[in-house]
Structure formats: C-alpha cells, structure tokens
Image (cartoon, rainbow, N blue to C red; front, top):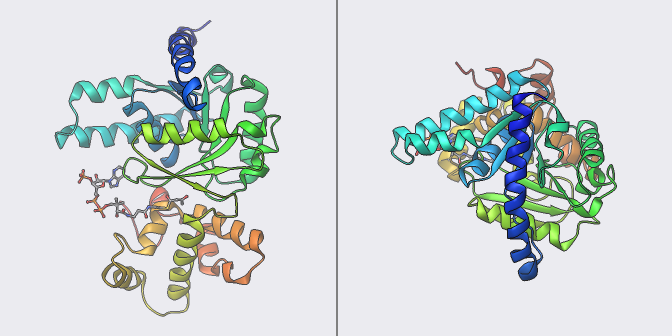
Length: 315
Ligand code: CAA
C-alpha cells in the first residue's frame, strides 16, 4: 500500500472517530449529521472554491479529479486566494499552511469511499454527473450523503441514477465561492429531512446562507440570472451595443457589481449555454432560446476567463 493511501486512510479513520462522537450528540437534537471530512469531486473553479471554504472551517477535504494536473491547478487557485488573505492581514502564514494541509488530492474514487459526505462539482453535463453518482453509489456506505453542485440539472434525475435517492441533494454554491454567501439547497423528490438539515447546517458552518429552493429547471438564481446574461448577449448579437457598453449600462444603470458579459466570462460561457439549454428544454418555452452568438463562442472554445478569451481577452 502506498504511503499516500496509508496517510489518507489514517486521516479518514481519525475524523471518523470524531464524527461518531459528534453525531451521537447531534442526531438527538435535530437529526442532522455533523460533517468533519468530505470529498469534493471536480477541482475546477467551483470545486476548488468549495474545497477552500470547507478546509477553512477545519474540514478534512479530499479533492478528486480525473487528472492530477487538474487538481494541482485547483489547489494552486486556493493557494493564491489564501496568499492574498495573508498579504491583506486576514490570515497568518500558519493558518494558510494549516488550511492547505487539510486538502488532500485524490485521483482514484476508491480512495474516498469511506468519507462521510460527498459534494460533486464536475462538468455541467447530465450524463457525466449521473455516471459519477452511479459510481459513488456503488462505492460509498449507504448512509453517505451525495450532494451535487449542479447549477441547473434536475436533482431528482441525478438521484434516480443511485439506489439512495433519499441521500441525494443539491447544494449549489456561487462563483467566486469564497466570496458569495448564497447556497441554494434543493431537495429531489425523495430527499429526506435529515439530508436537507445536514446540508443546511454544513452551509451555515462554512459561513454561507442556505436557501431552500424547489427542484425546477435552473432552480431560482440561475433561472433569473442566466436569461439576463443571454439577453445581454442578444444585445451584442443584434448590434445594440458593444460588450463594454452593455456592461457599463448594467453597472451604472442597474448597480450590478460587474456587467453581465464580464459575469458570463467569469461563470464560463459553456456553463451559461448548458444552463440555457436546460431551461429551454425543461420549460419548452422559446423565451429561453440560447443566443446563437453564445453557441458560436462555445464552439470557438472562447469560454471566458478559463480559456483566456470570451467577451473580453484575459492575460
Ligand atoms: N476568488 C476569491 N476572491 C475573489 C475572487 C475570486 N475568484 N474574485 C475577487 N475576489 C475578491 C478580491 O480579492 C477582493 O477582495 P479583497 O480586495 O478584499 O482582497 C474582492 O473579492 C473584491 O474584488 P475586486 O476588488 O477585484 O473586484 P469587485 O469589487 O468587482 O468584486 C466580485 C469581484 C466579488 C466577483 C464582484 O464583481 C461580484 O460580486 N460580481 C458578481 C458575482 C456573481 O454574480 N456571482 C454569481 C455567478 S452565478 C453562479 O455562480 C451560479 C452558477 O451556477 C452559474
């Protein structure tokens, strides 16, 4: 057995002992499970953000992705954020190191099979997500909660890929995760009360505000926000004005912290398109038709900040 695997198993064993004691105390009070260690599946901007906020609050985090390079990128992003906190005097160097030491890279899902909570933040693609949930379902103990950070896909549908739909739930964070306070908590058709309470408590513990939303396409925030972004792209497409001007209009005229096109670049144009497609298909309403220009940008791999070009060009 490799040293790394032995170390991981030791971390899981120690936190497991803490979990058993804490859960015996807490279950009697509210039925919620206290989470000490968890796995984050996907080390992209959402996954790494979630890993950061969890590790900051003392959780042991196993961050998984299919390639080690993706994980190292994600951890690099976390390190950069923490270094900024140290420079600004919000954290000490020792605190930064302690947070990083709680984040463990994992490329084999087998290595997380004993954790007590999983949050999936992989690509926004229903088939990829359902596959991951199928695998997790086979690997993890029956009581382990499987949460998804999907931004629009039906929780009920993802849950149906498992034999534990009562333990599957949406836990939707917002970008940039370390800054944005909201977590949408979305129950599927079969999600039980204990699962919902555990996720709400976990969100509060990491200083977020959980808001319960029903399982409809796009949930609430993205159903409102992404069509607004799509409309801004239509304005560019139809020549109403330039991206810079559209953003300026919304910043100065609607007091948005950043314009809708800069925000689209931050979210990722591929993600914006997937969400529009889920809305269009889910409601069958032409008002959700994705703008052809958005499709073209995605075809060109101009996905925003992550590929260096979207409506703006990034260094
Ligand atoms: N990670 C961590 N911290 C970040 C960050 C990031 N990616 N980006 C900015 N920050 C921090 C900065 O470090 C800065 O903090 P300090 O100066 O105190 O260190 C603070 O945020 C403000 O940053 P800036 O001064 O550079 O810029 P800003 O004032 O414009 O704020 C912003 C940046 C917080 C991103 C702000 O523009 C904003 O709130 N934009 C809207 C974000 C939004 O709407 N997010 C939701 C997207 S939708 C979504 O995520 C759901 C989905 O499923 C698609």
